[in-house]
Image (cartoon, rainbow, N blue to C red):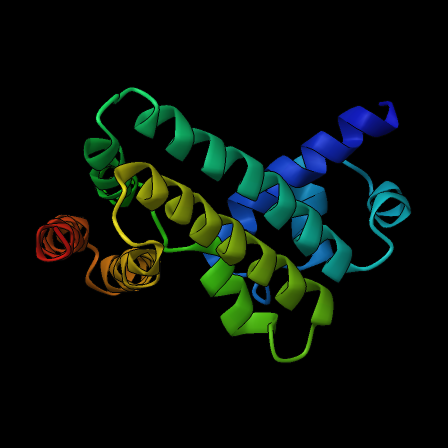
Length: 184
């Protein structure tokens, strides 16, 4: 198995196990078994588990933001595009394997002790906030509105994970709609 294939198999296993069970609950031996990549090769690719966690979060970030943008891009009206973020969150929350936000979960487990993981989490959250800011700018509402809209989305993520229901996205969307109306 070449390095690129082994890396993808390791990342696939990491995504499934880390997201489903938590980073600290999963050992390198678990990843070996799930990926079919030898332990020696895993350590050649990722000399420390922390590096695998960062790589998993980076790859997930690209996919997560890509899925969000693809959903939002189906709409033309700038306000509808902004509210589509919350529609997409509701769809994500309703997925059978939804276990909350991978970055919030990883930060909760490792953020205080792992600078690389904390940096990756911060980069993801900043990219999401910047994305929302761009959507707000297109509506011609004040860009300061992006901050509370970001907090609504983040709060919905946490609440959906805790409750096991997708309804927090709907509630956040209605709050976002009210904020948009209030700033007209």
